[in-house]
Length: 74
Image (cartoon, rainbow, N blue to C red; front, side, top):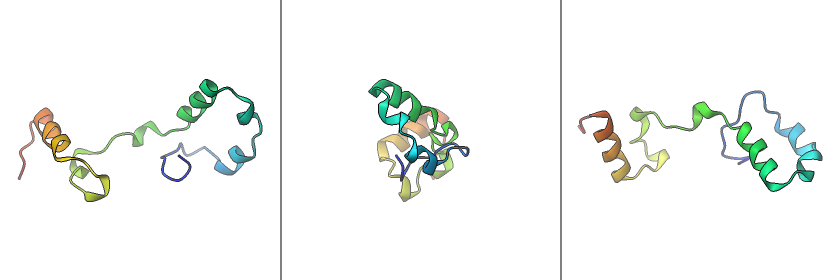
């Protein structure tokens, strides 16, 4: 998550890594905290970008998306 996640702009990774309180939380509390720092605006892929090979979208997913949006495959 530290390397690949899109985190909220206000999140300070260095301060977080120094925080000893996180280690004392139970698993569910840790999950809630980690979810709260994810940037929800980055949790989807724009339709126009789905054919970009960087995103590894399967052919089936592309076809379903095109069907859903009524897009034509050119």
